[in-house]
Length: 299
Length: 332
Image (cartoon, rainbow over all chains, first blue to last red; front, side, top):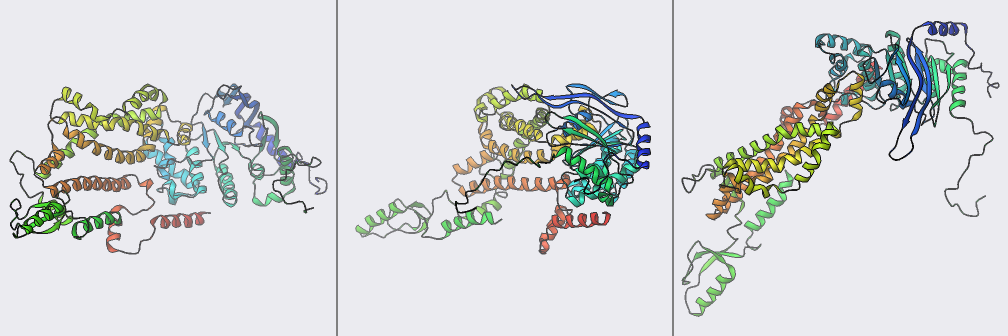
């Protein structure tokens, strides 16, 4: 199939892409995950292993997408990185310091809308800026307005979340997470609840925002195209238990454009992901059960 | 307002249509019946029997019109009592005026509810937010709320005397335990995602409580308080019978003794009106102070004006959405 379309191997990188990855790997390591294990213990049952010896690291200003079949522990990984869950074993280091709990150095955007409904857009973005002792509210407001402008919602600074569309809510959530100047932006399927068109738009916004901000992004998704479109590298997880299958370098050059979706490098990368995550069922008959009684005369 | 139409029409039918119910007779002319006098209301059967007896003796029969028992006054009588109730001095000098009785009752409710809320709201929020506090307090509160508040009447009088303090205590007991549990439950319903988001932004536990939990539940809590205030009113009548009877309950009982049932009805209706009025006012205040719950940008005042002008009503929610969708299109 790959030959029939005359696609390059997904590992094949154009010289400028090779150069880009060489420079990327020279940058300092921001996030380091070492032998991370996470067990969930249901009452009176043996523990279920959600994450099994996960190890990887990200460099400064890298976008790392985490992808895998459902049940592979993607969201658990994001929550452990955020500090919302504690690891059973292993280490998470941010700038060399171990993570012990949630903190403003790791911003998070959730799939469900988590804007504070009682605060306006402006106050939502100001929330994290006003938390430290002795924070001045006027400088928080100035900064918040800049972030709101960056996500293109200046006109809606005084609107309440219920007045915004889903895509706009997530842009505010991104602004709110970035406002505290985190080292890492964790995004747990942030566009999963949006329709396809809005999602494509949001991916464009995210890349634009990322271009202007010094932040490393760990982006959890189950959408193959989204992963290839956004990522420098893609961490592919296996399910039950969640293990690292492969850490793949995306050979699509930057800046990314929607047209690249049809480029050979993009298609090759996407096809590789598909083969890893949804292995072909060719040769294996799919077991079928007749669900309805159609009568003996049929066939 | 239609909801009030059906009972009112029924009441009017029973009161004004002579062949519906009207088991009594109001005597207009006593005739030769010795024990009747004009203006008296007697049972229809007795009236007929007596007239038969008088007719048999060849005397003058009594005359009268069909009437309802004295305990069912007609709407216009109650309406008159509602108006004159505030202008008629009490029958005896030591009795309260209607407005004095009402104010006394409102004061009892106010203090009982205020004291209950001052303790109950913070405790409820703490129970909802912190499982350890809930485990410490909730089992006992759960037990106590099944004890009927009036059962503590005798105890309250023994401890607090015979005046207003035991009445306030009964309202407190009736409200407080429900209040803690209801508010704890409301607090528990707060979206965990909001707490996690705040944590990832660097909020400390104290900040989580003060900046996320409290503002996150305050609007729901306000609605709970409106419901709980209704509960407090239901305990009022029992509370006012404890010790020295007082307030609107005393007023109603006195009027019943004088067989002034129009005033009894008027007082009962007043309680209902005060309750309903308070709730409507509180609801509209709620819409003003919790703007994020409001789908319309217009406040209650402009809505009232709009209603008064009887313009065709436009759904305000729809209008707000349109604007945002258009604007997002512009940005996109």
